[in-house]
Image (cartoon, rainbow, N blue to C red; front, side, top):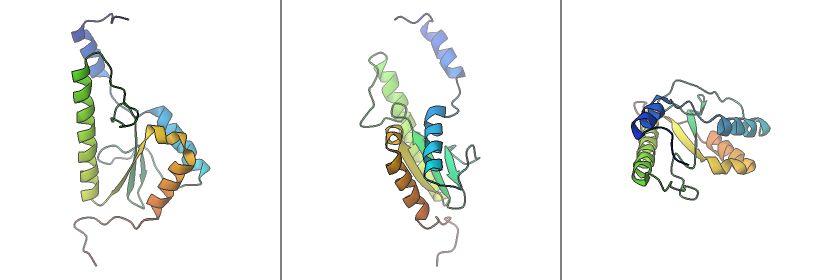
Length: 146
């Protein structure tokens, strides 16, 4: 079906849309956390990169990455229309994810990224979270090493 807006109008409309997380995937992870008895997490914390979930005590930032928007190697199906735009967009998203990981790690945070499709296996996701939470807390770069 053809778009009812011109390219310029569609671009202006899309530019006005601001990301605030994917409620469906976040709610699914909340149900996994609750079912697994995993506590200590918070949402909407002021931390670089805006993680979906933060475990401050363990200094763990958790992101749930959508298969399309973050370029899942197993599930990404590139749209046929405007392919160059979408390739560039997803490449920028992936580069931003890597930069976010580096910056968080440099400031003493551990980062856990979970693919959207992994939420279909709640037991595996819960196990992965439990393992990440059991690891020793990350040290800040400027903290003295023992």
